[in-house]
Amino acid sequence: MSETKLSLLYAQEKIASEVSRLADEINRDYAGREILVVGILKGSFLFIADIVRQLSVPVTIDFMRLASYGTETQSSGIVELRKDIELPVQGKDLLIIEDIVDSGLTLDTLYAKLMQKNPRSLKICTLIEKTCQKEGSIKPDYVGISMESGFIVGYGLDYNEQYRQLPDIYLLG
Ligand code: IMP
Ligand code: MG
Image (cartoon, rainbow, N blue to C red; front, side, top):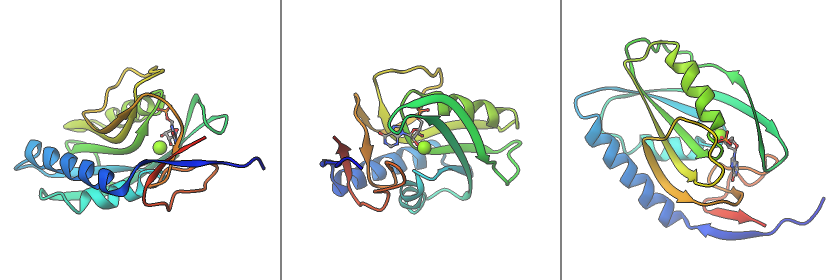
């Protein structure tokens, strides 16, 4: 295995302040309503745990899991549904919680699958958005951090299933 080098990119304090800002925006926008949070496994597990604890509106929580194939650091655009949502969606205000939107192809697939189930509304919150190489057509409504390019790990994000447990986010290089 070749040696991998990690350089600190976003420290946990920066992540925490973005999570709080996003939670404030969501609380304001959804005042008086109830949210069905759709957490996208596995990469967003820490982000989901942190953000839902700062939501003051009523929430229910469910999970989906998708896998996109490709090389280790590049998505192929072929997205497979590994686990579907289990709670009823029709008439609900859905909020997708994603770790990272890269090409946007995963998000397009996810959006289409959930829209088929007739929610009342469907919005997307992502911790990270990469701005280069956008191929998808659906834009996230809430974005924590925008970065241009690069492959990152930590705070739930992995490289070959490693590094998810790190509290900070690192650039892999
Ligand atoms: P997409 O290219 O937007 O479809 O992203 C596909 C998936 O690749 C994301 O949901 C992540 O799970 C993963 N991914 C994309 N960029 C990164 C990264 O920089 N680090 C770790 N995982 C990533
Ligand atoms: Mg993901």
